[in-house]
Image 1 (cartoon, helix red, strand yellow):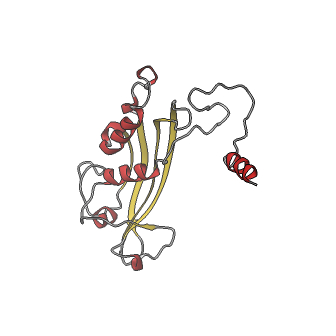
Image 2 (cartoon, rainbow, N blue to C red):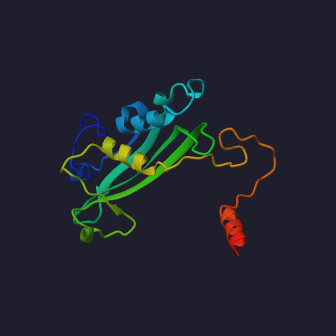
Image 3 (tube, rainbow, N blue to C red):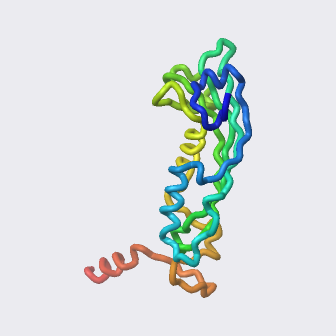
Length: 183
């Protein structure tokens, strides 16, 4: 085998050989994920743009085997981790977004083949695939719809000063005032 992460193989070939490997790659090697991150970072002022974001490391472990003694369906267990540069959708500032994805996939032809309920059935469009594509897909699916800082005390909406006071938002206050006025 050449590079098991980049070469195309069937899941059964990888399971039959008991293929297991650790990897460390750069985000630039995951083209679709790099495009998503780049599009997100374009909203930042040029002076706030993180340098070297394309060199961010993506690490993980993958291990292929069969789901039963009869060598039925191939399965994959592993994990993938990366800390991506992103834009907080609350303060529109740069942030670091940690992603950790646990993989427990069964390459079955249909849901009925799934024996172990802890595994998710992963359907392939073709018989052969590149594990690198699966790693990239798992990270893309793990991206939040709107990234925000985890500490809301330090994250303020763009242009808002941190006065130390918390303002309560009452979205229906205007409606109540209008209803009171009409009565």
